[in-house]
Length: 352
Image 1 (cartoon, helix red, strand yellow):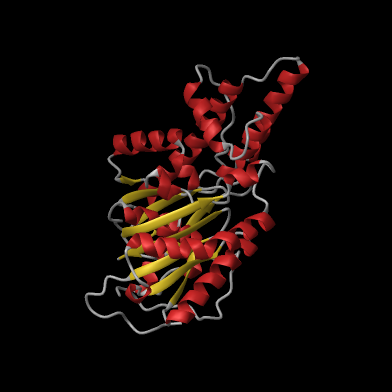
Image 2 (tube, helix red, strand yellow):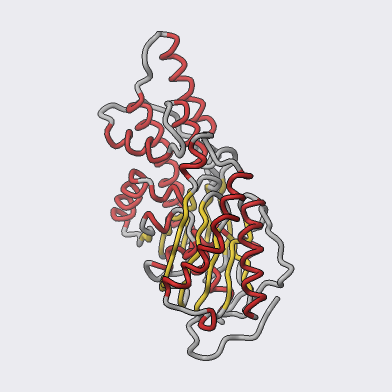
């Protein structure tokens, strides 16, 4: 649905809602780059006892908090409903029940105030979290690393996404959580593996899955299996597994593959910038390795601060701004779509 274009000089003040998984977040963002408020209510403590996210519980928690979060985000931003230009919400991908809570809340708010609605792609949000800290220069390469996604994306122009590589099995975050569980760490496991890897003085040599020579795809199931095999071998010998050594070996293998393929993509597509995004972008080892390798090669690198790497609504506001300034709005009968395509969500082209 295409609506009327905004008036000249209107920066666009968007109320954004994100409920794709286990964080309820609402933000107010101006001009796709300035955060006026960004509130996040995490459910980690609730889901930790189950060892992972329970979709039905996540949905119920969103229902309990979403209205209060919307009121609080507006209040903290200093804006009133009359100041808003549009309402943005994560349409997908994500857990369908969780997405539905945010979509219904956003649609109700937009309908009550007569504001345009912008259904927004969750991964586009992660990528454009970088626009909240600096200017994105095109063409660029985005390395997306999160609990459910591991992708290399080419952005040939603003808002145009082309996926050139994706995981064939586990996403990076899933692999971290499974390895952490095997090493008896609580959910979420990534931060524990990252910390242990930083502290380790020894390293277990583990395989790298490079796949075909020209492939930008990823595979981490074999690496996960290698860690589990090492743990089982220790148990058979009645020895405790070398947790720091295994954590470091696992993390070094993951980082080596991610960084090498991302830098190869930058070179092949003559990208002017590399963007790191997604929840695993908060991983200290990955941030340090990518910063060092990009520095050696003179590649401009953008990495959001940790608070903008994990799921948050400010990133949804930043991505939705691409649609708002072109008048590309969503109909009020828009549905939550857990299989929403990033490439199909791309803006329709050209300057606004």
